[in-house]
Image (cartoon, rainbow, N blue to C red; front, side, top):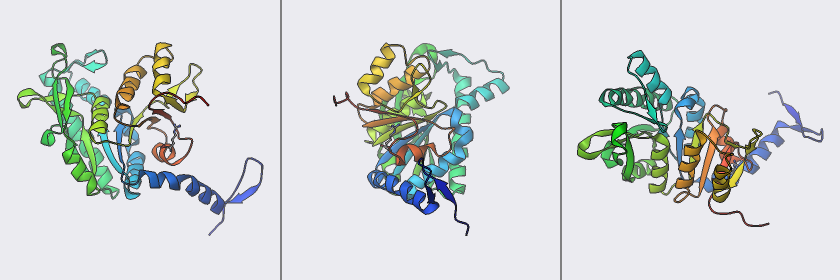
Length: 295
Ligand code: ARG
């Protein structure tokens, strides 16, 4: 076997064995800490193209003893199908106006295409994945968010029992963001919100958003690696966090009431989950509860 060599920043030559030892030394405490802990991971619709690498990392996490639970979106796929079927799309405050016909497409795409696609791929890679919908066994109960939006729900209550039973047995639940509305109707719910509520109900250790941004950035584009709840609120006030980032950060801040750490990482980056979870520095933005202790 060929032995590869690398150089340290000082120019010293080190062999791969040293590199591996270093990676392990950094990772082992985190591997230990995540054992038995529930991690709710939200896969944004825009990261689904990269689902193979993401699922690979998730299967590793599960093999290492963590308990990952996935919630996925599917926006781009829903848009594509609505376009193909010539059904007009309308958004209000970032929420899709969902009439009966649109709801039919949303269900078809989320369940038939995205959820089953993820489950099939994870299973092919050897993961014990199982597909769920928020309407299964009272998992997500919802109410109509606003009559004008049609079949769009806001979360009323999450019953985590089914998911708890599954993760205890080593399954990886993959959940489509639909909820059971009044009179047994099905409602379309924002996946970030479902993930945040689920993380709370499951007492998750972490909520991790995989999307198509590197994390929260400063105005000059540089990444903010870590910030507290209070700092995040200030950045919203100061206009540093703006546009589409605001609802996501708001969902993170909401989630911090019940989850100690929320992470935002770029799902297009290879093995971003492993780098965020098993290194000191991480790969995206981590938001922690409370205010920073003066040093
Ligand atoms: N791996 C550690 C954890 O998961 C630290 C992550 C730090 N991440 C960051 N973006 N600063 O808790």
